[in-house]
Length: 535
Ligand code: ACM
Ligand code: ZN
Image: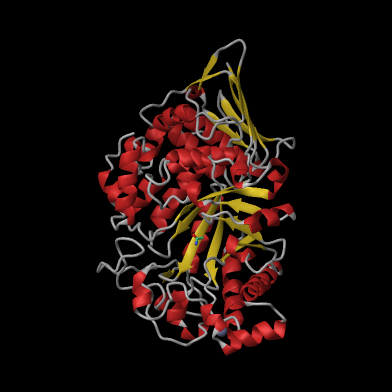
């Protein structure tokens, strides 16, 4: 049995030795409490063992509940007569089965059903282990999302942070504002060759999820132990909505959905609206946001809503009579505080619906953020306000650029960065351990237009993300690299693309620098084109 990814916290072989052949399992009994994940558990085992598992049989795999175990935790006990699983909840039960399936490589040409006798006692280091998927910049659709959910589940990741709106596209049906998708989900073309380029392609991008489809995907995720948290980015990164409803801006300017992701083009056009901020002085903006939240919160049962809140320019607010009047009437010091006031207002609204707000670390800018807002820390530069927030008892999810921005080239951020991540390097000393809610990898898609490239950027980074967010023990990068190689048949089982070893390791500093230069110089596919897919 190979060492799995993520590594279990404790795996003790039986002193006497011995093995049990999983192929002998002919029945399955799952505690009623695990009804949510039971169909997926059954499916994984049946497909993996190549047989139907009924409730009776000579050798039943029993998956029982234990009140001693916390949520997401499980124990596996293998002796010469069989396998017994206990779990703290439906997710824990599923993780136990994933451990067995991955350990025995079930369903792959490398399958080995002979398991050593011993005990596994496993639980996550962080309760929040997430992946951000940006479907605003490019749209991948239901099949790719479900595929990612399947693989996330295999890696014991449990949060899909779904970035559904941005300047370049609005991808979720809102019944009260139909133009959001009728106009806001379509653009004619896309900027190519990097943020500073003026080149564009001629490939239209469109697509959105109906509310029915959202419900279906959210339910699909739940059966895999995954919460889906929607992000509707505001008050900036809202230009697709402004294309549909220009009155959302301080100045009502009719614009198409943006085809550029930043840089020179918007400046040459005289309106810096690749992330123009919405007007916070007009009551209609807040009404729009409340209406949207009313529909969104119904679709996503997770007790969180992501407001984005990043990269909000203040220039429109400075010149807007309504925004200035709002600052004055609220007794705020400046535009940064206007942003903080707005975030708190939305936090209050989602709180009234039983949810907590989460936002990117810029939400701390105004120094007036309420403590219960979860801060997602992404900025490449250190933000002392994040540490202050944590010191005051606030929560943080870590997505620091250097380790977790999976859209960036491997030459800049090799696999080692992600694997070696340690919260202490970023100022989170151990006394704040409980305030770090978790970790998320981010897959932004400005420069990713196909599922194949999406997967290339993501694998094997997802393995490192799983390891650092689940397993809290010592690290050994060399061994990890071997484990990543051993894992390939499991990725192949899902038909995934992934980066080759030369690319994800980046051992040569000269080629690294050359690749980074080429990437920033305008060939965002430099690594992808070179990829030979071999580990
Ligand atoms: C971000 O990358 N603007 C959160
Ligand atoms: Zn305004």
